[in-house]
Image: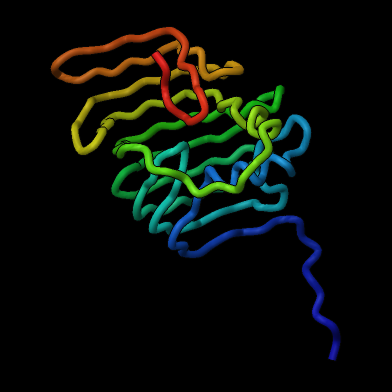
Length: 193
């Protein structure tokens, strides 16, 4: 009998069903292994096809969804389908190492924040992790706590303490809100006005 050998391949497909995935917690962990100027993705993970009962992402919980996608160079092209969100995302790495998220959602239903279970981190590492991603997001049907809010357009660039909102527009049959300005983040991911 010969010894088993691992294939000489640097690509991994993650496929399966998970009860819960705390992306926020994993993102904290993965920042230590991030290559200089690269995005916060595992180096060898090349493709995913996951069915999740619960996903923790951006301080929010999402239930019953499927995420599928492929990595091209250091960028991820993802499709997300579930009761609370349906759409596509491109998670890219800018030249300065900042994540850039381009998302187009048919629906996005948000619920109130819930506490996240995360790995404890040092204040120094926490400060490095606070730099948010650049956002280019369009949601055709945004809901919050079951209430329809309308169409959302968001274009935001990261700053040390949050985002510079280049465009935040929310429109529905009853009216329209257009905002430009700063969205600051304090100890938790929430807005300060």
